[in-house]
Length: 339
Ligand code: DAH
Image (tube, rainbow, N blue to C red; front, side, top):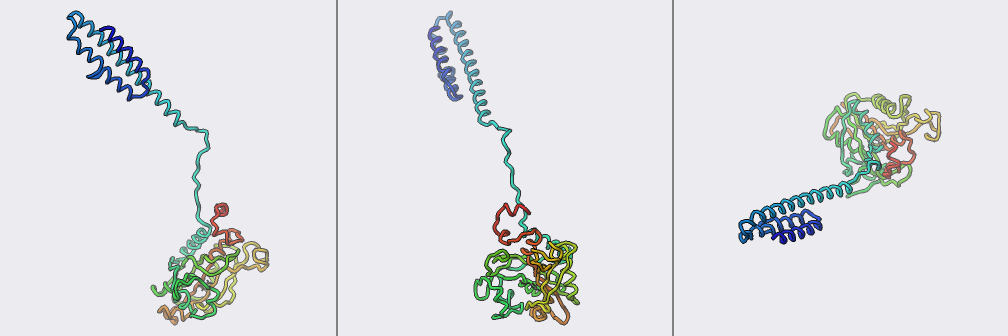
């Protein structure tokens, strides 16, 4: 019996030494210490022993059992710490490695300028109006005194979706929407995209941005228009800036003017920026044509108004000293991150 126990114990130690996973340990436990295990079967066979032998063998079995349990739990401990060491090694963090930084984006320069102008006009009591970029011919041309066949349409050719629908060429179309839906007093600006069949070069793009302004009320005069534009020019180009109104023709205003500001680079002396002129054109404006008012159900005998249209790209180029408009649309972050 003693020999048998020793053989079992030897076999157990050999198997234990090659067990390398908790599963294998569990297997050994069942095989030797379980209900149908080797030790239990010896205990079951004790009935055949003599009464003197029984307690001795019983003690031996118990000692072997205790020994086996101890070895099993020691081995389990060992496996666990080996596992932990492996895991720590695998998850090792090198705190001296350079960190990953997140690049923060910023507002596009066109949006920055647009937002700045919005803030300025909101500060003067204007509301923001909105209109569709896909527009009816009526709003973009006809209601603005540009009937079919009008020669001034040629300078604003665009993409026609149908005979009567097009990509708007000017935000002036929003004037009509606003006046159809609201009666004076009206004081709005409308920032937005416009489209023209222009070839791309340093100062032209088939898509660009305008800010339209419209004020209609009793007793609005050209003096109000000029004062407003002076505030705009000084705010955008510096407090020393002067403005100059040159007579011009826009079909939807009468009288009309183009507005120049004194050159922000040379202060009006003449330089490369202003091509030696001392002045730079920044917008078109005028007093809303009586026919336009009438068409929208506003009586020109009672009300008058002024309107203006500012080019956002042009203003942004001036402010940031950009000489090629294409850079605003190319999406090159090396350019954009400068603003
Ligand atoms: N819509 C004109 C353009 O794109 C600019 C303009 C001129 C707008 C005179 C106006 C205005 O509101 O009164 O060339």
